[in-house]
Structure formats: C-alpha cells, structure tokens
Image (cartoon, rainbow, N blue to C red; front, top):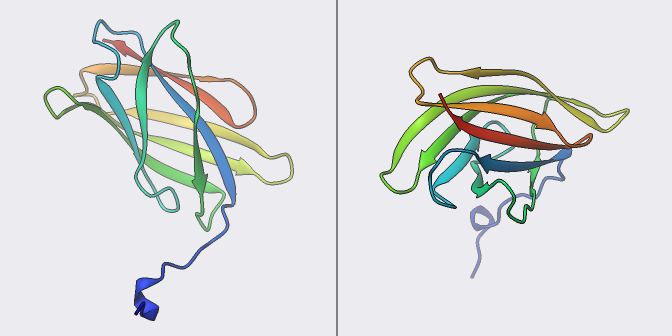
Length: 132
C-alpha cells in the first residue's frame, strides 16, 4: 500500500531551459558531464558532445519559486571522477516574453577548464567547454 509520504507532489514547471554541452577539448566523446544544482532544477545532468556531432538539447524544467535563479554548475570528468570546472550561473526568466537570460557566469579560479555560453534562441543555450 502506498502511503501519503510515498507520493511526491507534482509541481508544474515555471519554465524550461534547453542546454547542450559542447566539448572542444581533446577528450573523447562523453567524457564530461555537466551537473546543475539549484532550487527547482534538482540536479540536472547534460552529457558532453563533440563539435560537429549530432546535438540534442536537454530540456530542463524549473519549478523554482523565483524567476531569478543562482545555479551551481559542476563539470565532472567521468574517466577519473574529478571536477575540473566548478562555477555559478545566474538565470533570469522573463514570463511576459518567455525568454531566459544567463546574466552572469562565474568560474572558480582553480578550475582547470573554461566555459563559454552562446544563446541559440530564447530558451536554448550552448555551453562550450574548452581548455584554459
């Protein structure tokens, strides 16, 4: 029998963001995993793809109570379980237009990789991972 505590409450997402992690380093395909941690995003994960390969966006719902979100970002190396990049992105969702802005990207100074963000459309972004 299912108890009331066994049922997770469903909350409709406020918005969706589409992310793609493009690896421009010399690592093999799928080496890196981007993990996002923020209120309402719940540990979202995006696997890396190489430039020129078929790219699909990971659609991540946000149930955050705010339209402004600070999101911790981790890049994990699946080969050795290290985290060569750690940082924070700040998202701002504009409900009237449906557009999401990444207002700030901060990378920890000790990170071994770098990251650029390119807007694809109003809700999709390419994260480009590169060597420092």
